[in-house]
Length: 138
Length: 171
Image (tube, rainbow over all chains, first blue to last red; front, top):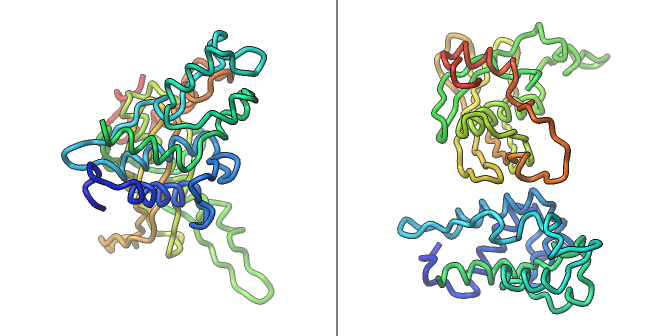
């Protein structure tokens, strides 16, 4: 793998696809940029932990570890804050929190629905690629 | 870990690696059915692959638990890879070698090597690899009513640790 500090978008995409193929045991052709991790690739909650570990391994270098903090890729304990979630849907404050903490996710479609049961489905392969690219650029 | 599937801890370096062994005996009743003789074939007692995975899960689980002083409820969450190329027969010993790959508040990932040996041969033969993912249950199961006490690391584990000279490792 090339030096992760100078990876192109396509190189990141390929590495992310490899991570997802191994973690989710899916076929290469299923891992399209727009594929949702939960809705299309059948990722379960524990798979996100697996994916985080594999991303850390894939993008760490000797000089620069790639460490993903808990909740960085996907916020934790959303239900515990009534300012964010009420009656199973995200409030305006909740949506602002999502956009601020997850800039790697496109919430434009989700904003009309806001159902908490569907929020995980907003994370696509492109979301993961953007997440990695943003972290590597820091 | 009410049903221990390792006999002895050979090496434990918390945060790094653990090695354990399991002696396979024909006295284990399940071997009489796995596989029993048929009209066409003689009996073939071999250790079920599922129990070899269980042995690695216990080895790696203790390694993960020891890394945080057995304070976390360490639950097997996912078998990332499990491949075994050979059977283990009664009289042979299985060696489980687990290395900690990652650990954080959410859980841990381990890579494992499975070997077997004939008694007295002194030679270990690698027969497979088992990579596992563990969850720190209290931190990933918000809303579930888990018991307060650590039900994962119980009395049987204490016996195993005491035998390995690590009796003080768990309260």
